[in-house]
Image 1: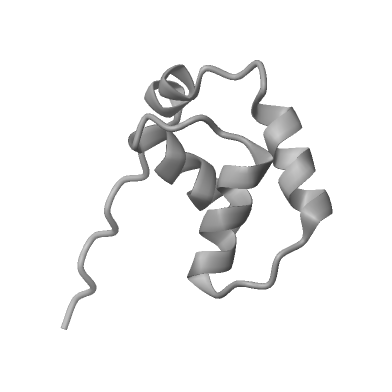
Image 2: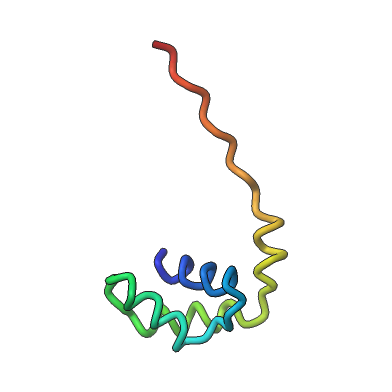
Length: 68
């Protein structure tokens, strides 16, 4: 999940989603780095318009409060 968060952070900051940038964020977070996952993520997102994907994602409704 940290790899996806890194990509979203880079997108929000208007930075290029590259192996180097994703690696930097994952390392800075203190998470264990898996280079294969970084390569896979960057390759998977190469032709994806992230802004369109975010807009198309369904929004989860908030759960109703439980009765006391």
